[in-house]
Length: 119
Image 1 (cartoon, one colour):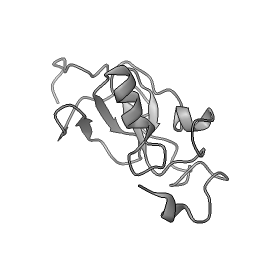
Image 2 (spheres, rainbow, N blue to C red):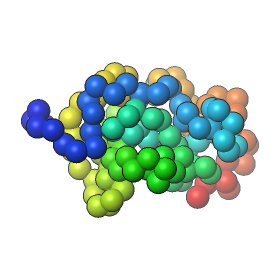
Image 3 (cartoon, rainbow, N blue to C red):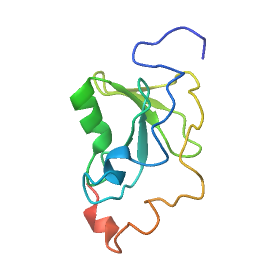
Image 4 (cartoon, rainbow, N blue to C red):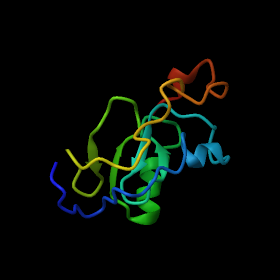
């Protein structure tokens, strides 16, 4: 990817943490399936398959339309407004949650019947 500026992507914005910021702060059941990173501010939210869907809620509340995966080995971007998947620039590290963090996560918070709770 070239160094051209893409609206909604701030390559210097560091991730807000290692897990869904909202789930970890008590908004929802406290666990997630996959994680998404806001490409504009670095907010880590859970995916739409997760019970709380905090990644989409962050977009709805802030207007930050571009997210990227925060899963190890994934490097795609998604624009909520255009509903398009695309390639983008490298972002500030880390680019994923720790590989030892389980999916779903976080460890110790996932219910045994988690598969029935997915969206």
